[in-house]
Amino acid sequence: LAALNAVLAMVILKESRQPDAAPYKPYVHPLAPTTWKHAVSGTGIAMLVLVALLSMTAFSAFETVLPLFSKDQFGWDMHMVGWFLAYVGVLVVLVQGGLIRRIIPRLGESRSASVGLVLTTMGLFWMASGPGLIGLYLAMLPLALGVGMTNPSLSALVSLNSDKDQQGVALGFYQ
Image 1 (cartoon, one colour):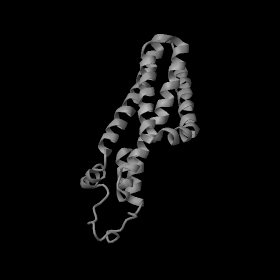
Image 2: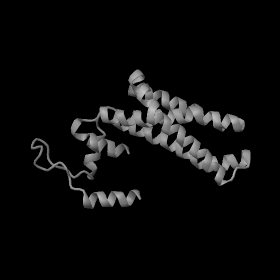
Image 3: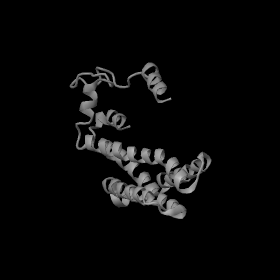
Image 4: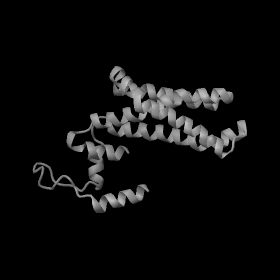
């Protein structure tokens, strides 16, 4: 679906910035490697993208390992794993849908991302320690809070640290 989306976007959507819109900068196609290089040259953008990549990889590894772990530890089948992942998803939605609006104004994007990464790490280590069934459900609280805080905060930091005319490209690279 993502590949189809990308192809349709390239074919159907027209470039919103016209080559003559900014006479002081030469027009470069949005998919050209030089565009990506310029987009991540902002303050710490490449590091933010790397942190996001590592964070998302860790969470993806959790989703991949969970079926094996839960089958071994609790005898779960795929149906039970699905319900458990739904529980984690609801927790993340609650954080991103409401709680994050209260956290970021108090902590700021940078601290929110840092706290989110620490909470994610704590949740993953707690889960890996084999805490039992109740402990597993409880370990998902810091994990979901951490993931729910990290992703929007890193995305906001990429936007805030990009040149105004490069925000779309930087956020596209981030995604």
